[in-house]
Length: 127
Image 1: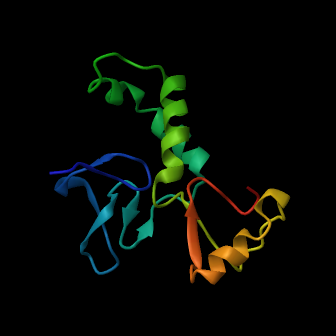
Image 2: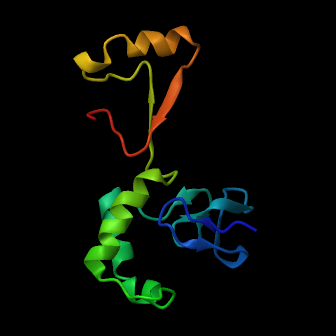
């Protein structure tokens, strides 16, 4: 069975640590430390979540063959977190995006192919 991870903090998900939806059912995407009763427990930025998670590097090191430093752990999270569901940015064709000459015609090409939404991991409207 494939290991799943919290889509907010990256914690390994087991039945015991699943968060809950508004109706009390288990949420398969988030852990109980991030998500309860259908909402996130912390309103924070991705960087604030990374800083919070970094304090648990000693716990992470228990499962690693070679320990990593807090700084190395932060670096890894900065690369990993933008791919998690909570932190991904989805752009639609109607989002205001700065004009980039290198991408001239891309919006039209995408629209011509019937695509109305696309995902760029870690991107935001300023990217």
